[in-house]
Length: 311
Image (cartoon, rainbow, N blue to C red; front, side, top):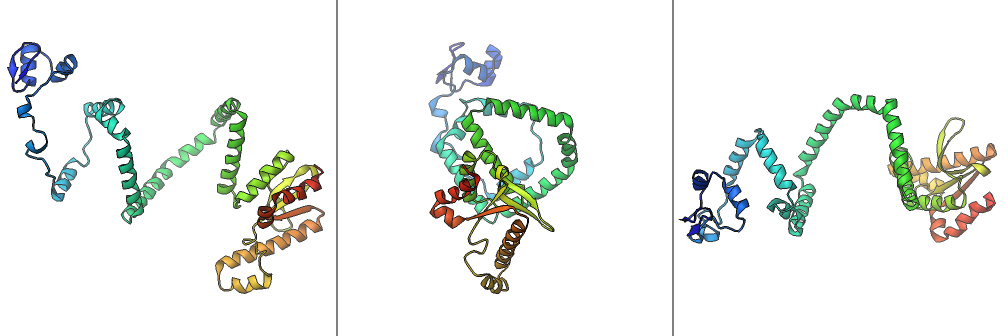
């Protein structure tokens, strides 16, 4: 038996009816008043095998029926507030569960298994379709906001304030990430790690160097990897494979008839030849450095540019 600590009566269970009628309080208020007090006698607590539902689960049909019955129903405001409180409370069982390592590991494994399976294909299609509808509805509104002078001015001011608060180390890291992200996603130019490394080394020696400079020839527009305005010199970082420098051009032409990738390589090789001819014809200096040469001896490649600049 358990004892009601308010009136000292004994019960098999301190019920909400007794507390409401005799003491005008709820079970929750009783628990707050006596946190360690027992509400049920051990003999009637159905734990483990004592519980008639122990080890039993719903059938697939029952689960589907429950799901259909609840689908489309909105939660009441009271229920939403209760869920919010349980989520925000760090001492709730929900918060403790989601913070545990075992739960996080199990969740990670289940997500990896789901997104790696064919079952996720419909999920991806549904998300893509939903986002396309949303973008169609909001793009025009967002574009008006983004193009407004007020928004641009406010954004510029916030960026300046953020930049001033950054340390020099964070500024360098942020600038490097921005350059990599911008040129990879917003330009039709592929940026290799070797090219970025060469640019970073040269930037420390030659402050006015520009990463990616657009040059217009007679009938083409090229994006040259680096440009040094002080000495009017252009630098191209060429990959041996993608620029076809590991084979004779006649061999590439034969291979281009069989594979599409060799067609791209042949076009890159011919473009490089047109660039060399145009730069020479117009009296502009173009320095070419290959990825293999830079990988074998980066100091020699860097010095090749520094000798021209006089640094």
